[in-house]
Structures are given as structure tokens and as C-alpha cells.
Image 1 (tube, helix red, strand yellow):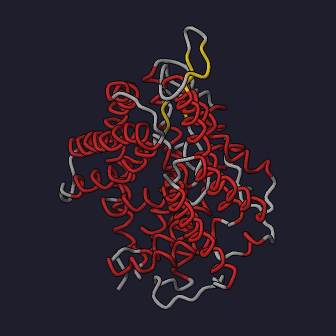
Image 2 (cartoon, helix red, strand yellow):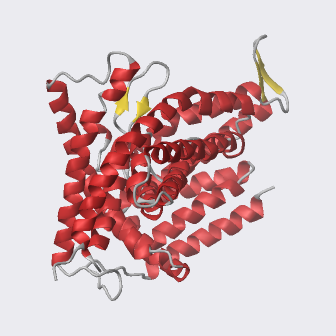
Length: 265
Length: 192
């Protein structure tokens, strides 16, 4: 269970992308995810690919980590690709095997959709590979600050995100321990009739909840003792700094959007 | 800020973390394995109440979208494209509605109210999740899929287990609810 939660997803470094402010990276990624859907012909998809390769190059992330990020969606990509090849019937027939006909339009659509996927996954993976979760949280808090006008508790949400980030590995360890302890007592989640399996969850849930509540309470006490009183007037230890690099990055994105709009059919 | 407020804040964060962990505890059943996640969602709604329950699920979604692999199949912004993302949104709304129904129950909500709230919550999760599967397959992924196929795989295959869990968790949640309320009450009572 633990190896699934590799927290080394963030890779420290000092490339151009690493040095960017989390805010500019977040804005960049959000807008990029939207403009990917503008592409609809060879020229625009080509542009997207070149642009993404360029971003990968300047982030100096090893390709191995990016491919790793692709793993969870690779089945989806292959599946959509095959569906398009098999079922889209447009244009000339490229290949005829009697029972199977591959059309030109289908092949083109399949490749386009695959590029869309790969580009999306790469760019969002670069965001998380070059930005620590804590800076992402900080960046989000600042970016979403205007929403406070609508009475949304942005500071609280950001703080809760940081706490959750901090406690996921801890509670994970704990769950692992409890599961092993219950297994040693003969509880088995994988055997017996359904009723027994559902029943076997209870001895797992109860200790987990007891310890989770205890941790929440301890943390609340610790925060109160240190004088936590909400977001009002709170200063930051980690300061965010927006400089010329960030402006360049946003400018490149605007240029990319303009090119995509210009070349799309 | 009163201690009880900070406690509820940390509790929400811990529930978000528990939801993430729930995604990884799989219980193998024939046909569809179920994760503990939906149990945590029921509990978040019934114990934390509408607003806090909603917040805990939103925090979970944000942590996942920010890139930590806390969802069943990874994480990151691209998860929005996954057909199952709708269920996560459903969790948030479902937790809110479960909390809302139980809050209407007065001082001591009945057992029936907990169970009904969870059943309504299950319905809401599917009402958001299943159409999203359809939407994602047809429009985001350009994969034409008929509504009946989606209905079979996204709804019928798992709804049975979830209804059973909703009832069982409802009974379980009621006990924790009173224990915790007593505790919160103790925290609130400031010695004079």
C-alpha cells in the first residue's frame, strides 16, 4: 500500500521552471489545460507538442519521471486510440483486413486525442514535479484570495490542505500498522462471505478513527497554545516573489494561445 | 478563535486525509472491489455536519488536483478528464446533503434519519457521478458510448454494495456522533 504513495513526486532542482513562482505556474497550467482543447488540426497539435517539449527541456526533468506520470492514464490513452481507429469511419480506407477497416480519419483522430492526453499529462506533471505541495497550497491561497469577498473561507481551506498533506503519510503508516495488527489476530478482508468481509472493516475503522480524532485534538491544542487565531493579520514564513521570469512565462502562454487561435481551422 | 473552532478545523483536515487513505484500502469482492472511501464520506457528512463535511471533501479534491497521488488512480489536474472524477464531486455534494439532513434532526437524530441521510447521499453521489462518466466519455475523450452502457457499468455494478454500506455506516455513525458531540460539548464548557 505504501509504495503507491510515493511522496518523492516533487523533485528539487534549480531550473528555470523550478525558480518560477507557484502562482505563475498554477495560472500557466490552468490556462494551458483549457487551450489544449483549441487545437484541431495538424498545425495546432504540432505547435502544442513543440511547446510542451520545450517546457520539458527547460524544466530539466528526466524523461523517466514524466513517463511515470503517464502510467495511470496510459490504458485510457491506448483505449481511446483503439476506439478511434476501429470505429471512426471517415476519409479513405488505409488498411483492409476484411473484418477490420482502418480509415484515415480514424487514425488522425486517434493520434490527435493521444497527443492531447500526453501533452496534458506532461504539463500538469511538470507542475507537480517542480513545485512542492506546500508551495502549491501557498500559491492557491493567494490566487483564490479574491474569493474571500464571497465569504469563502480561503485561508482555512489552504490551512486544512497543508494539514492534510502533513497527515496523509502519518495516517497511512497508522492504517498499515492497524491492518497488520488485525491480520495477526486472524482478521481477513479477502475471504469469507460478503457479510463477513464488511464486518471485518469495523475493527479497522474503530482504531483508525480513535487515533485520527486524538491527533486532531492534539493538533488543535498545539495550535491554540501557539496563539492561532485565523488568517486575519497572519504573516508568512515562506514569502512568494513574482519577478521577470514569471511575467515571461505568462507572456509565452498568451503568445501560444494567439498562435493556436490563428492556426486552428 | 475558540478551541472548538480550531478542533473542528483540524478534524476536517484529518477527515480529508482519511478520505485519501480510504481510497487505498480495497476490500476484494466478486466483480467489483469496494474501497473504504465511501464509508469515510458517509461519516464525514454525518459527524462533521453539512458545511464541514463539504469542506473536508473539497480539501481532499484540491490536495489531489494539486498533484498528490491521493485518488484511486493517481492525482494531478488531468484527473478531471478521468471518467470517475464525477464521483469525487459527488462525494463533496453527498457529504453536504447527508450533514444537512442530520442537522434537521434536532438534538438526538434518530437511527432512521442517519440511514435515510446516507441513502439519499448515495443517490446524490451516483446522480452526479454516473452522468459525469457519460459526459467525460462522450465529450472530453471523444469516445461515443451509449447511455445504457454507462448506466450498467457506472451505476448498477456498484450501487448494491454501496446501499448496504450506507445502512451499516448509518448505524455506526450514530454512535460516534453522540460520543463526539459529548466531547465537543466538554471542550465548549469553559470553567468559570
